Image 1 (cartoon, rainbow, N blue to C red):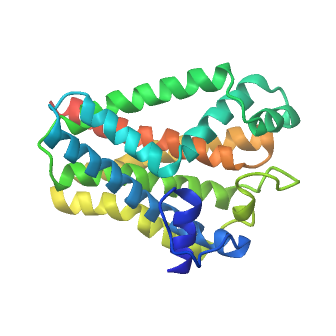
Image 2 (tube, rainbow, N blue to C red):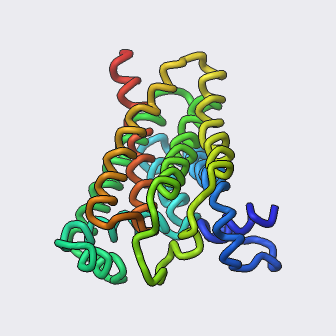
Length: 260
């Protein structure tokens, strides 16, 4: 429970017991709960969506409120990482320049455009996914699985690559020690469980094929980060989470389209 609350403290803005501290060892070990945090954030998002459909007309407002809720719950932690990666790789020509730009708290042109486009794609993908069928457990599991699978993918990047910053002076410093195979195994169970529950609920085993685009995006990102940085940073993990979350939404939307 201490490790879970440590993860909740590090990855969200949600309150935790006062005795939970910022111990580097606990923060490192708590990485296995990263997908479980996705359950919580996804639950907040889909819960907000349902409440908004009760209070407001079923137009774009419930989708927007849902996105606002998830951004608030995480403090835009991962969105910030994605924007920094856009700025860093867009404006830097070598490892030093990229790391320096990503460390800058100011938002540049690449980050602004990248984040704006990402949120637009996420909004319209959610709109297509959530309004295609009546609200129920299947819809909720789709939403939650996107958050858990995207965080699992980010955890696998920690396992695959070394930490890129030599001074360890960044947001990912506590998890720079990596993740063990056992921890990754537990994270995989937590990350896959919502998708497996959806398969059990609907019987559509084709949902498991969504792991293929996730694997392809992961492979491309790992190659990209390795080539330019020789490893990952906290911003790289945030970018991975955001991109793969959108990929899951798009997979659901694509399945709806081709099955019409």
